[in-house]
Image (tube, rainbow, N blue to C red):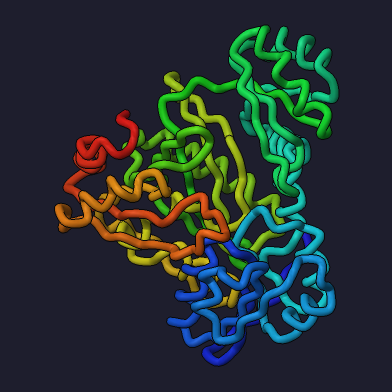
Length: 379
């Protein structure tokens, strides 16, 4: 890996944020608290991250002239989403400092490259096969088994459709997907819990961990995250060892998330690597002595980063449009719920409207509190 140089920024220096996602809002707010000048490049003039900007720039990701202008205005640039093209970040890096780099983004945006990297590190992952035709699926399920999931190799560029295959008759449903490119077929890992761990890595390669978070997904979307995750010490130690192994082999500076499946026997399987802030980490806004946003900023501007301390149990639930009305019934009832709304315009067709942080005496009490509302699926 290339040796990275120290390049500390100070109040008054400028940080650029590129992307329209909700992470950008929190990153911008954290940067402004540290006295940085915030320059935002968004593709939609309704992007709420622009509301936090000192300098607002709106343009396409194909406008190289405007992108160069944006980059040259910034002392450092950060991307807020793993869905921003690595080629775009590579281009911007010609004109400014991007501590996150583009190498890690390039790897994780290609599921085959990501899995090859994890296999090289002897990390447990779900069995998989490369698929270019329906015949490939029929042959692969013999070793992968049912259920399994068909996923596009590329995670970005608008094609992220997935197909769950529970039995042989489901394979025919995959025909329309195969016509759109190369896919992977991945075994479904039975699991007791899904876990998320956020870390920061500085220019000297020092890794700093946030506590492990338990996550719940529905239809592939994050629904809840809760900390602490209620894990045995040996599981915590193994998670930290695996993550350290992965991060040590990446040319990356900033905050990064690794997610896991934990099965009944205690075995861990890496689900994915996200080279930016993951929404599961929003719980630390109230759960810890530092948020994921501030920790990310401190890392990429080369400030000292202290140890993360868990202060209290916190749960988070995502708010999507179908749940808004039900959430409003809790608005007038719950004095221990903290609400954050992203305020996306309808024209941007937001996938989530915001999130709620739920306080309680324990993680279990928080789970029961959330379940008792009937708004989110019960465990």
